[in-house]
Length: 305
Image 1 (cartoon, rainbow, N blue to C red):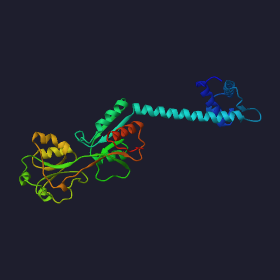
Image 2: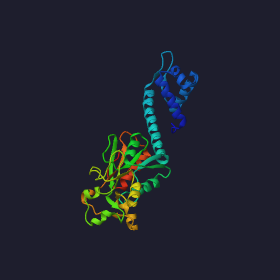
Image 3: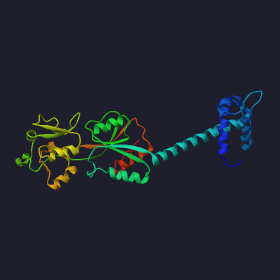
Image 4: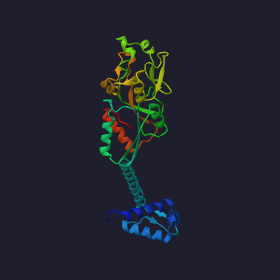
């Protein structure tokens, strides 16, 4: 027998339809062919294989012993072809797919954050993938993940939400800052919660607050922001005290426009950042490849599934 070609595959598929239908006549509608055409094609297949695959006539349609074996063997062939097609689709998705990625603001200056490294690694391998990014607070990223509007998120939540999977990847140190002329610096010592409460504070949060001052008591005056950029503006105004990540505040410290307040240890805090996905979302292979790149860049030895 010659090697199997496309014609053989088509004839074998016709044979399967006939066998599953229970005969030539029953297969006519599904094949949209006349019975004589079906019979001719079956004859071509039997000639091609050198086997009698079925008995047909007054006694009815019945597969021969050889026909049964060809039927079962070709079924395995079709399954392999289907698996092959799935794999090809996966490769196409990785090469040409689209990923929606969300992360919190002002991470680029954090030396612990290696998202840039991960994106570089990913894009060098999957250069045709579109990465659509969105910057917003953790609560909105989590909401978007649960609503399947984002594939992957980098979040820093206070409470881990049900329905999401969190993998820790890095952290940052948050400190209290003010302008160089702020009166609290005149204390010339480690400041306490009571010292802070005597001054206007810019707090961070929307539905709930996240800093060590959040439950400390009533402030003289409080401003609320949802991102680092807005917090920096309030501190730079010279009126407010507020929290910023050390790496983000450094540019204004170097300019002499901002000063870290020497606060007691309990007024410092270290947010943790997580690679976050929807537990029920079946990620595309492109998204899975990006997730793997992010975990590898942060040396997280977790088998992501």
